[in-house]
Amino acid sequence: MSEIPKPAHVFDRDREWAGLVRFATSPSPDVRLGVVSGRRRQGKTFLLDALVEEVGGFFFTALEETETEALARFSRALAVRTGGGRYAFDNWDEALERLYIDVPDGLIVIDEFPYLSKVSPSLPSLFQMAFDPRGYARTSRARTLLCGSALSVMGRLLAGNAPLRGRASLELVVNPLDYRASAKFWGIDDPHLAVLVHSIVGGTPAYRREFVANDVPASMDDFDDWVLRTVLNPQIPLFREARYLLAEEADIRDQALYHAVLGAIASGNATRGGIAGHIGRKSPDIGHPLAVLEDSRLIAREADAFKKGKSVFRICEPLIAFYEAVMRREWTRLERGQQEAAWRDSHATFLSQVVGPHFEGICREWAMFADAEVFGELPGEVAAGTVADPHNRTQIEVDVAVLAREEHGRPRRILSLGEVKWDKMVTAAHVERLRRARDLLSVKGYDTSGTVLACYSGASFQEDIPGDVRLVGIEDLY
Ligand SMILES: Nc1ncnc2c1ncn2[C@@H]1O[C@H](COP(=O)(O)OP(=O)(O)OP(=O)(O)O)[C@@H](O)[C@H]1O
Ligand SMILES: [Mg+2]
Image (tube, rainbow, N blue to C red; front, side, top):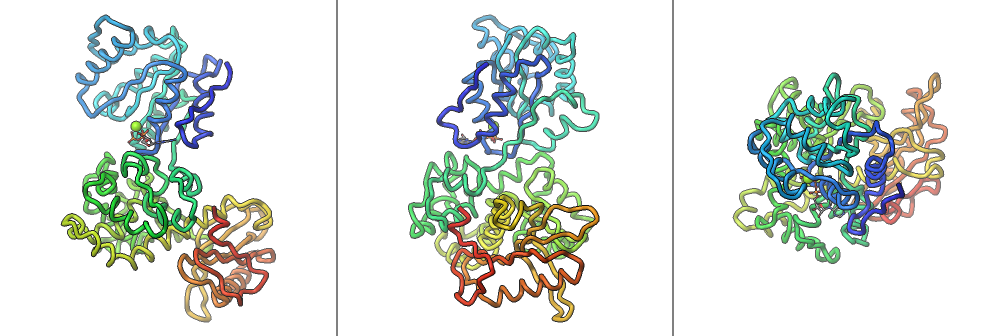
């Protein structure tokens, strides 16, 4: 079958589209089941909807409902598709049998699958049986896609000894758009503005559409006003979104504890001990919330580039970081309509706790995907790193440490050490610190012979920076 072009209304997602089309049009009889997951509002439904438009099939969206209600809705939906008739299935076994008779080809999409499997836990096994050589699905050439955002549930679907393990030929995760694609999606040409907007709404497509009714800041001058009009405006859905994101995660009961953990990370207390200390709990007490947040990909653990055993947690969803650092502290004033005062008083916090760390993350992402000529070869690993400086009794924080791939029996090569500044000038003093870090690392046994010192800046560079230092300005990042 020939390639199905991606419809014009679908932005980016070329790789996702290609994978879905390959799945939907594969001639192999073994290709039956695919699983599509990803956090809320990334465009899973949007993509699958576009695909079903192209290839035909049957699309069912589950709701939070009882098994009886779900079956009744499913019966009606299938009856409508077949045109007339009435179905009243007593159980999912019957429903699936009919499903594969009535849908002989194309795609069968079950969206929000976790809602179904929650009230009908045997459903994954029933699908497994349907895909057996003698199962119901043998009569149909249709491919089935199970889709959902509860990552814990979707992950478990294919894990270990789960019934559907080994059956899926496609496991597609729909991630947020990267920072460059986001700028394009928002139609923002000014890279400064793009960083600021991305530091609040990240790469979630829905946040530019439904959530702010397509309100895009016109220029840097419009940015503060845009913040007041949108994310800080109680009448706009984006205002409560960070809270909903957390509330929707099925495994989260004690909201206050989770917000406290996220708040600690947002304020820069991002090691396990740091988080525990910040919220006044013991380290073991926060193991569970950290694991749940990590499973749902709201936070990620990043190992220190140089200090074995040390890792920091980062909030993956910028909107949540913004909420924790800025909005939660100002919630009362925000709800009472005192946006302007709240935003004015949050300016310094916004810069230091939201934009600063976010911009460092963007620089690391840029470094990770840099061409070979930038650092001499393709990076193996990029992370922030801490270097102890015993002589000066301090730690040197390296914002962007780029390491070559690990090679057995050879010292680890450091491709680059970099300092990031969003709104301050990078000076020769910063470069001196990087040099010191490089010397200390070399003493520790790293190979620093080819280490490129780098400065990344959203502002400017002082002229006294030596010529061998690589300068990465904001235009280079986009
Ligand atoms: N590739 C895209 N191009 C243009 N708009 C998109 C794209 N992806 C998502 N959107 C926008 O984002 C909105 C939300 O997407 P969608 O509802 O598909 O997310 P989802 O991943 O299914 O979320 P949920 O888990 O909450 O159901 C869409 O209605 C659309 O406006
Ligand atoms: Mg959806």
